[in-house]
Each structure stands twice: as structure tokens, then as C-alpha cells.
Length: 179
Image (cartoon, rainbow, N blue to C red; front, top):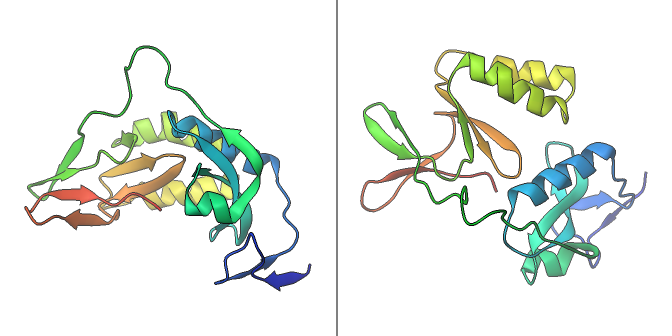
């Protein structure tokens, strides 16, 4: 496998494979990302995935710097909201932890029982992860100190309180969403 340093569509900060192979799992993840990013116009881009150690497809807002630099092709993507405005993430959701309220509205789903984790999380991730990865997730979340598993669009998960918490100038706490 050949590698090359930055070309017109690659970051100058990394060396990547010249072979960009899209797997069925990559396409499923791209579909999840499109489903989770509603109401805006996106374009398909190449993005480095540190977890996989390779490039994979993702979505960037049309006109953004990322879209201009890393466009995979001129493939526009838009998922519209359905209905008349319900479930459009305008709620403020929080967790009270150690006596302080933490805004977790950047997460789109929260699981705080082993039962909900086993009923909803494991079947969901079975579409994307190997049995070994599922077992590692289970070990990571069903351990002392984890009070909730947070899901972030398009399909990232983090434990709480391990999720980075930020405090603003007024003393309000909120979580940091994955980049």
C-alpha cells in the first residue's frame, strides 16, 4: 500500500493511503450521519478516522472549509425534518451529578440503566461493530462510576461522567460533544 503526503484533497498534517476503499460499514455510517444531520445541506467528504486509522467518508456543510478541501465528489446530501416541527432538538436536557446540574443537550440520547443499554444500545451498534467491539463497549459502560451513556449525532457514544464537562463564565456546566 503506497502512501503520499498531502495532496489537493488531503490534510498537510498527515500522510494517508492513496487507496480509499469504501466498505459497507462506511456506507452505513454515512447513512447514520445523514440521518442525524437534518435541515442543512451537506456534501460527501473524505475524513481521517483515528479509530480506524484510515480515511472514510463523512459529511461537511456545503461551503465550509472542510467541504472545499476534502470533497469526495460533488454529491449533495440533505435530510429534511419530517412533520411540522416536532422532535427538532429544542429541549434542554440535564443530568444532576455531584449536586450540580450538567446540560447534556448536545447528546441526542441518554441511557442510564443496564436494561436500556442492553435493549437499545447493543442492538443498534450490532449493525456497525464487531462482537469484540460490542463486548468492549459493554465492559466500558457497565462498570462502577458510569452513571449514563450518551449518544451524539451522527453515532458517537461516551460515558458520563467521563464525557468532558465545560463550565462557562456564569458557572453553568455543559458537556463537550465529539468533534
